[in-house]
Amino acid sequence: MARVFNFSPGPSTLPEAVLKKAASELLEYGKSGQSVMEMSHRSKEYDAIIKSCESDLRELMGIPENYKVLFLQGGASLQFAGIPMNLLNKTGKADYIVSGQFSNKAFQEGQKYGEVTCVATSKPDNFARIPELNKSKCNPDADYFHICQNNTIYGTRFTSLPDTGSVPLVADMSSCILSEPCDVAKYGLIYAGAQKNIAPAGLTLVVVREDLIGNARPETPSIMDYKNMADNDSMANTPPCYTIYMMGLVLDWIKSEFGCLAGMKAHNEKKAKILYDFLDSSSLFKPTALKSDRSLMNVTFVTGCDETDKKFCAEAAKNGLINLKGHRSVGGMRASIYNAMPIEGVGKLVEFMKEFEQNA
Ligand SMILES: *Cc1c(COP(=O)(O)O)cnc(C)c1O
Image (cartoon, rainbow, N blue to C red):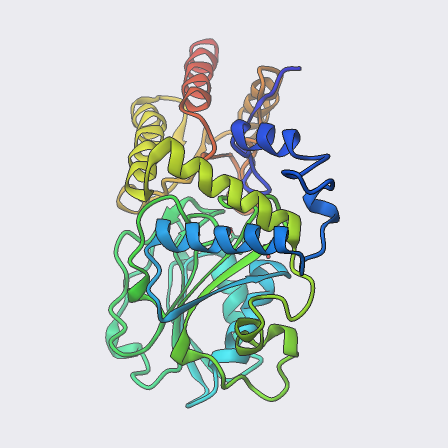
């Protein structure tokens, strides 16, 4: 067996140690005589799994007591509707920064539910940077203010948060959650699809301040109502049991390998630096994101020639470096180097890029 280095934006590579642990417990979890996949979500074995997953997440992210952790389904995309359904309930106004395709989708979905404003966008720059915010455009009485913290497709991220005053900040962290420390108290709500940095696909995490829930719009499906889910410990219906178990293994891995999210961040910065330093010195490959807004997780670059880009991706794949093709709206290449991408993977990639450049 030869495992490749997988630079896929999502679903993405998982820590090998986690996959091995899951394999070793696949047929029988502990002394339960069954696989986690087969377990009742109401069993005491499963109760211990989900509880320790939540407490490890609370510990790693430093989630304050007055925040609920919800294990949901439907992807980050369902939350594009779930957020307005649950939070757009006082003035019916919300502000969005549109810094990429996912935040634009969230903005469009939000418009179905109220007076939703795009207060800043970097669309004219093909989302190569995080837009400046003119505070006079913001609604001081908005029910929430939405950002996408890391723009998976364009390789940019917010390095500082917008000052939203008393308006709750809502952040899509699908592609950056757990990659660095996060001051949860600065947010009203954080959400993330699992398949980039948390676990395999199938789970959506929502961390929400208690006082924001319990007032969902009347048409909200009950399994999308955060209050109902919180009151039922995310088990108003069957949760994505196995993915939550996998998330628990990933959290254990972060704790044992890196200690805390500051350790995780240091590792991620080291990886990103190897790649960006090379890109900044290369005469063939050019990074596409504004330097000050560069993502630690998704590194986008082009050669400027579609043919060469195509050839590069094909030859990289032959060398065990897969899924480097950029999103169709940017073209070129994207290396997603989430938490689980080992430093050797980034090293191999840069080595291969140097070789390709010399032969070009
Ligand atoms: C992948 C991604 C999404 C979409 O997630 P789904 O789970 O497929 O709905 C949304 N936002 C961001 C930032 C993403 O990276």
